[in-house]
Length: 315
Image (cartoon, rainbow, N blue to C red; front, side):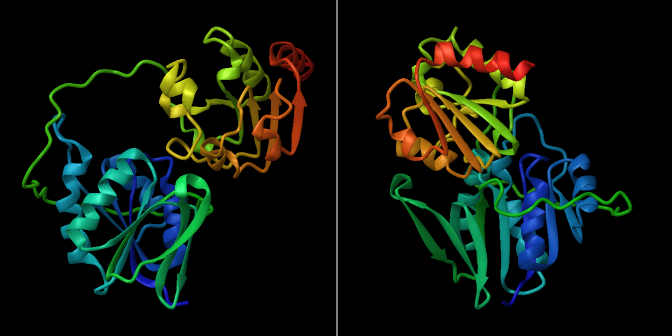
C-alpha cells in the first residue's frame, strides 16, 4: 500500500479532530491541518500534525464554506506532491465544504464514508447507497480526493503535550459569490455530539408524547447515557433537537450500547444505529422490524418497563 505524501485535515469541531488525524496517520506520510482557531491549532500540534495552517479570524458575517478557495489554494501550494487527500467530518458543514472543495480542486468526493483504505495508492471509500439498503465502494482516481468520514472509522490519536508548533496564517481568498450571515440567534437546547457517546438511549414516536420523554431521560441519566431519537421525533413532532436524530440523514453512531424505546426500526433509522456493539429494543409490537436487528428485545408497554428498569439500575 503506497501512502499519500500529504493528507490534509479540516474539522469544524474540535471533537472530530483526533479521529481525522488518526486516519491521516494511517493513510499519509505528512499530516497538514487547517484550523479555524488558535485553540484548534494548538490541539492539532498535540495530536501530531506536521504543519498547521490557520484561516485567521472569522468575521461574524462570514460562513466557513466561504473559505473553500482559501483551503483549495493552500492544498495546491503546500502539498508535497501533485496528489493529496483531504479528510473532513461528515457533519452538515463538513459535507457542504467538501462539495465546494471538490469543485475547486477537480476532486472526487465521497460523503459519509464508513470505511476508508488505500488500494494501489488510490483511496477506496465504503458508504451506504440506496437509502441505506446496501453498501457501495468508490475508488477515487483524481489527483485530489475529498472524503467526509463518519464517526468511529479510525481510532482517535492521543494528545502529547510535548508537541507544539507555530501555525501559519492563510490569506483569505474571497469567493466569487459569497453568502453573508446577516444575524445569529442562539439555538435553544443543549449541543450534543451523539457520535462520541458510549451509551445511547433513543426514543421513537412510540414514546407517545413529548412529556413522556422524561422517563427515557431518567433511564439515560441512571446509566450515564446520551439521549437520542428517531427522525419523526426530531423532524415531524419537533420533540427533540435534530442533533439527537439517529439515522441515514442524521447521526451515524457506534456506541457500546444502543437502547431503542418505541422505535419501529425502519431501515433509514437502523443504518444509523447498526454500528452499536449491543442493540436492545423495547416495543409493544412484537412484529416491529427493530427486533430483527436487536441483540435483546422486550415486548411490552415501555411506560411500565422503562421506569421499572430505571429503578433497578439506580440501585
